[in-house]
Length: 401
Image (cartoon, rainbow, N blue to C red):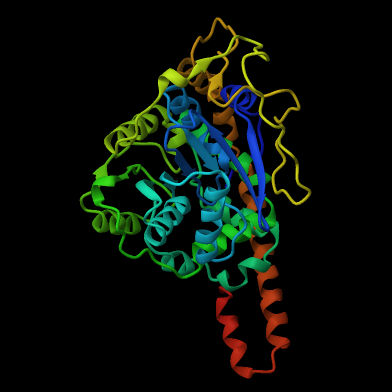
């Protein structure tokens, strides 16, 4: 696909990084990377990304909702290798940050993991918002012939697989921006992170009945296209027939980036409907350069095994989590909303050029052929090392060309 891997960060994301501290904490053997912003007295909305996402992809929701008086926590999916481990690890994370009752917003794989947690820890989950999500993983396993060796696959193969799941252009400007941002996030993920997430996607599992009433669930899907097959989205809609529907006419795979105004509105309406009371009175606007405006956050400690390199982290004192400085004065914008609009307009030409680089197609086809040969070598090596002649069924995972 003709998508470049890394580009300069959007202006509103740079502003977000200057205002919202990033946290990294070890819990057991797992490293958690997350943002936690907004009044601590408000029950949090926790955002769970899909395979290609990180905690950063929800920065537009964090900025908007925290200014309205809501608390938003956005997390990276840690390295876990089965669904039971996910449930236990996520519960330990909630205990560590002293959060007991939560509202979950999950997209794609994040929505599936949110449902599993709601099924097995029903007392902790008060509501769900599911976007472009699914109920079972069997379809994804069947579509990946090499799923049995996903944990051994090299980084370039895993990234190739994830990126080919993102629809190629041309896109309209806002969707092009969202694709470009997510691709840049994928480039920062390690081999272990990608292998873990793909394992969670293809490991056979399904969501059982939830104790949560349908009235506490909102389904927010895009109607144009996304990587999740339509039949899986229909299956989820049938399961939660009494859930509130919030359809977006367009938005692609990443509506939280391409259609932030609509997504933010639906999130706010959902939180109001399930009884979350915002506290805008606790949102304080710090003066520009306000290093004396409140207690500072502890500096985020880098861990040697951490999987992300954050180009925008700084050692300066961060503002208090219930405070946010106004954006620098500019003739182009005087609010977050205007910044988003100007960003999209400014990125139009760049993204149009970016997504029209069809000259990369032949190169990627050659890479695809190399990947196929790599998988064949792995499988043949495994078969030669096995004494059991019945193990030759592994050859069936090799597609013919």
